[in-house]
Length: 410
Image (cartoon, rainbow, N blue to C red; front, side, top):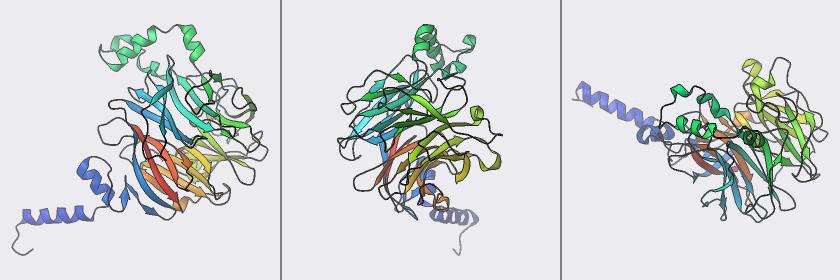
């Protein structure tokens, strides 16, 4: 270093500092996106105490359009199916369609998206599950939340997205809006090629229902909010609904209790559940309540098939909304997004049927530079690996797309 002037010395210091930066951060600085490095995939370490990441990639991108809120499942014939809300202007707009992509090679390649639901309203938050008789059940809800951005007609600029939302909205007959607004499920008996007519559900949640060992379908969801008023069970509740006819009809059988100081209407929504190996049902619910450790995903349990539930409590899972599955070895897996601090997609394992979660060894599946991300859902593949799908932008300046991480739990 002898003989260098001050400018040359500062340049060397800068180069050394960049070289010592974590690979994920360095990739972000140099390319404007989160890219791979030898020991990092999309901002997450390849080897972690409880996970080995195999790959992360885009599964579906619609250039110039926004994709959000996916769910994935393995169909009875072995195909992987991912459903989501696509072909959108942005996070809230009237154009959302429930779309589906399919992989016939274990997730290596994916089809172009096809529309499953395209009402006159915003079709959002699609969930999908396979049933033990070979059928598929898909859940979603419709929304008019975009109306909050077009209330003042005088402020809408001709040619803006909101201007065209208004043109579309003013042409919709009120009776058609009433008919199509709500939460629904549809069934398919041919692997997702065709779908039966929609049936109303008394609640809604992003990833839809689950099937229990006794054959019933159990659907945990919110019973109504400002946009939907009342889905059939009263506004501002997290309820449990069941179907005993494989998704052809639904009825409420229980309600999840929350501490008295927490307004469910204001702070809680988007639950999901899993049946454990010992016959209990464990549910996690998204909570925005910032007091007493409740920000994140809070847990309730049922020992009687969903009729009664324990009061929701924090379990240390710092993200939302949750998606839960039971792995082949009996472990429970929760995946969720984090939209604050170290943003990205995360996972956590339970080795004792959901009684505790290994939050000290939380798994980071993918990083991101902002909070417009998440709603991950997982499926375990025949070889034991896990595919987790979620939405976020691939590169800065782009709209969100459907992405996936294939990994192995440890």
